[in-house]
Length: 209
Image (cartoon, rainbow, N blue to C red; front, side, top):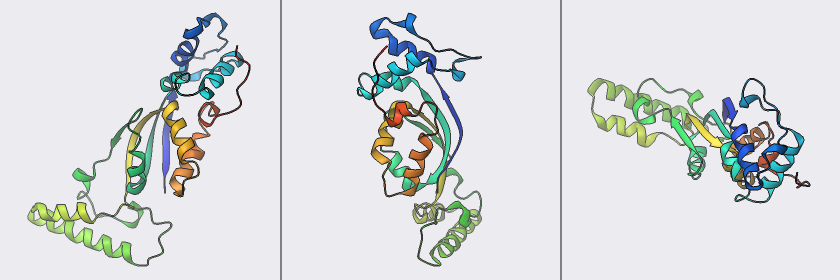
């Protein structure tokens, strides 16, 4: 299970200026803006340039780092372990497992178990976690809190507010779009819904303007 919500995309004005800096071609820009750069309607000349630079590789397409994406992601810990391999171009503030694992009793809805074929294991695990929580709240003994942390399965869903950019999303998309985890394939399908997503997914170069 993966949930992607509260998406914001911004930085288009700076990205287009940066893309045109090498050739001093700012006067050829044909992008129009609404009330702010977040409502940019990229013109065909600018779009051709952005596509060509993106497809020419990360050095030419470094303007992609200026197109910023923020969103909330809820996903299981086993997915987050792979997401965390992307260290450059990402920032994340997560709900704290360490501080909040004992704040309430866990339920099956707190876990991604859509592909689990082992009956009863989650109910059993939740009963143990609830018992450890009760002992910790009653005694304050840290060993029961530690037990919860160590028993918690990687199917536990964690929510994080994440900052990304189009370049790191391009790397993720091309590395993970055929991944065996459903969560990665769903994430890559979500990438396609972003504005001008072909700058991430790739396309045929056009005559540069």
